Length: 118
Image (cartoon, rainbow, N blue to C red):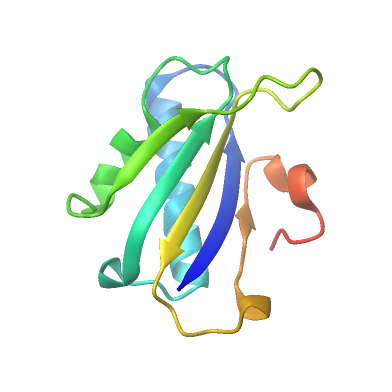
């Protein structure tokens, strides 16, 4: 099992933008790591305290993940942290070395983890 990290940023607190950004991020994470739905164990989402428009996990349901455990939490409110950010940790049964996992950061979130962002 591997954990795959990802993040994306929104320009505004808008439900449609949340849906679009989360779906885009998950598709890229799954594609780049060759993850099929049956490989998924669980997905953890966090969002910054300034996002109130929608649950990130609700957007993930568009990808036919109804039998995958999904959970949302609020990111801790650190002074100076990047606003309007959704972070994701996907747990998947994939047989690759940890060093080959592709962590995906989109829409400006690359600055969060320049050391691992793909």
